[in-house]
Image (cartoon, rainbow, N blue to C red; front, side):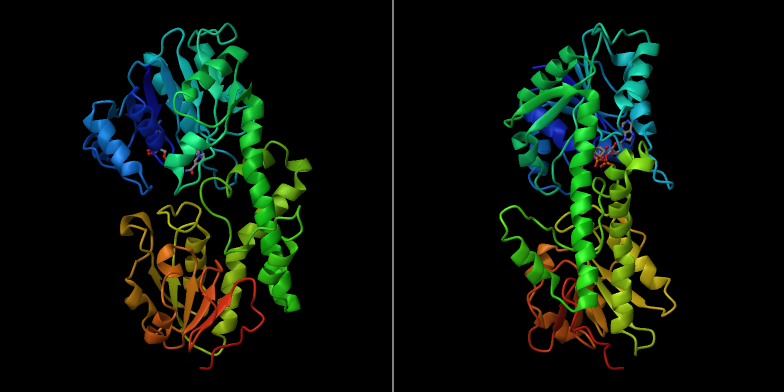
Length: 427
Ligand SMILES: NC(=O)c1ccc[n+]([C@@H]2O[C@H](COP(=O)([O-])OP(=O)(O)OC[C@H]3O[C@@H](n4cnc5c(N)ncnc54)[C@H](O)[C@@H]3O)[C@@H](O)[C@H]2O)c1
């Protein structure tokens, strides 16, 4: 099998390296972070993802996977570096540009170059291709086969979805799409659809924009339901019995590196004609304020309230805190005029990855006035709700993920979609 060089060994690049190595390819992984490279060369991993550790351990032990801070010659280059947004919410594609420049000394005629990073429409044509053509390669005549193959795995199931998901392969030329499709056919069991790079870029962005808009609708329903004293969860349950309706679940906001970011890549290129996408972003970004307003309401009669925050990641059972609304909520509470005393707990997050002090569960809950569940980790879903009553001053819980059981005994649980019974706690 071909030699593959994967640039960027994060949540996407590392599992991708692992499955290609497992399938028998010789994979060289590259990362600018020396700690990532050292950890990998010891057969260990630096991220949490079920099933990944064993695959990487075996791949390193068998010699099919090596890592370094510089690329090596290969037949296939896969670029999986970050594409964040700047503060003004425009895309930062400089990581992709740098990664492309970094492989220039190692590429040869006939190589396949695949950008897996999520990128704004036209990035392949306007940012990546010019770097290669300026270096003398004729892409129109397939000196190199350049394509964009967006990734659509869900953290927590990356190892199975990498193989099972349907893939879109967008080529700079038709031949480039075919070459890239053949690379993935070695590991992907799902269907692989070939198209142009631009259509692939837009398809990936629209997948996450679709989800952002639908989550915004559920979040708006939660706010409207609070005003109208309706239980949004009952409404969603019943409305979804319609065969063509699928209202999503409300929550504390949208985080992570995909749904909270990708719509901006389209908005940036079509600001005047994308009001729905912009409104969805605004609604989802407003949810942390909505959550804080509910905590304010609960603690109206208490001075210097103690709040236990359970869960800091952007979703349950992952260790990823990027763009997490939970972090936003904690800062909004600590900077609030009420001077909340906030104690955070998250069994999945390492202290060095968050700018907040972490506590164990007992410390966080001890004498707390309110507990705020911000991530639906199994540890919280499976917890006996009497734990809240055992430790808290007043066992009142605001469940922004609707993941806990109903109120029981002394423990009062308010799910975000059903805030009609929410009354200020007695001082
Ligand atoms: N995480 C997901 O679930 C997911 C899903 C689909 C698509 N994506 C997209 O995939 C891309 C990568 O995301 P991720 O979550 O793996 O990011 P990540 O931050 O976990 O990993 C990226 C890695 O690239 C390294 N890096 C940065 N610049 C580099 C360079 N010039 N050379 C070598 N290494 C470099 C970083 O040190 C980091 O380890 C992004 O565009 C993201 O939007 C991510």
